[in-house]
Image 1 (tube, one colour):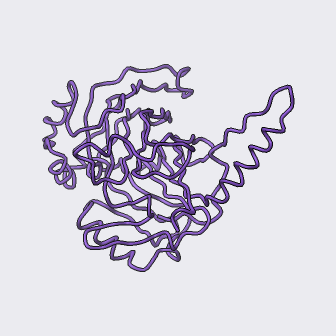
Image 2 (tube, rainbow, N blue to C red; image 1 turned 90 degrees about the vertical axis):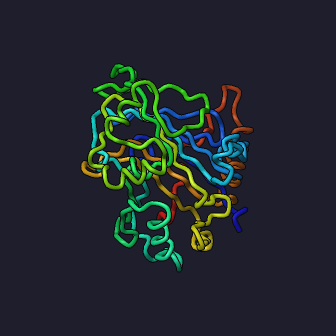
Length: 317
């Protein structure tokens, strides 16, 4: 059944899909995202990827790294906040515009409890609300965190924002490790943040309010795990597997957001959209026919906009 679907990954500075671009998957390329609140670069890797853009690599050298041989996906990003924000306020996770309670598969409640116990004790949310959400403080949930130096300021002309932004350099496909660069080590030590990722996450569960994401400082993060299998569309937790595909129909999407929960401001948004392969192929055939019938004066670009193939049904985690 999974072979009837294709994935598309888009990202942008807000919830508005018109601000999003299609992300390359499993390449060395990262995508720059500038918002009024954050300058960032985002990179997505998915094991056994089937999706758009066409001819995307099915895997990445990332998954051959000894630390990632069992992982199914990675959302890696480097960001620079435009204003300082509390560790308790800056959250990362999933949210939805519409209720999903009527579409949650049997066993979801058990999966949610296992996730809080075994994966992320800081996870908070209400999947049964009219606007469901599942958030956790970034400092406590992010799988790897590297604290970097102060970034160089950029002008408002470079960013199209009145306050300007900050330079976020390409990472050259470096795998992010727990730690620090330059004076980032003194920042971690000064706050009492442990060196290892596991201990840092335990520490952050109680100390998140004492951590500050500092204005103008560079932070590199990698969110990965072996639990969400995009290839078979299933959630795999210790002692529990939850198939999701049978509850999907047409197009559905899973949205990740980095946001300030106190103000509601989004820093960036990444959306994984599930598309019916048949619909994509029909659209591609239509575009090919239009292109082949072009005139001598040139043809209009048929590059698909992220708003095309818009979801026709509710979002689903």
